[in-house]
Length: 190
Image (cartoon, rainbow, N blue to C red; front, top):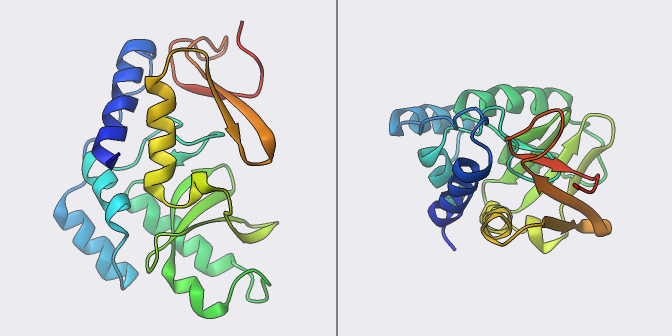
């Protein structure tokens, strides 16, 4: 499935089930991407670029389980500066020469998902835990993660995702604290 098809499924679910959700951001421009690429010294994988051309991040809307928001162009640059500043030089899971090629594209609190701009492979970085390559097929690429979410939301409820480590997360539009919005929860929804 293409990035655009996945976004279409996500957008339809939000329109139908989460009308109180903040609107997703507008697309970034080609000029925004050119400026980003000049700063990065490289180009994002095609799937991440196509997503930014559909929505410049996801704003406050949590898209990827268990609660990641997608970064817009400016946020990518901000988070990348943090990554380059604080990623441990002695991280055993990461060669120092790989750091410049890893670019954040999603965040959950202090955890960042990063994409290797050479291969499209996804890793995760936490300032306390360090860097780790994602090994589950869900995180093989940005496309595979977005496909997973799009297909889940296009299926009949309940929208339950089994994540790596057998963690079970449910998408709901009936969270008591945030009704009629897209929420990932570990708690079963009644």
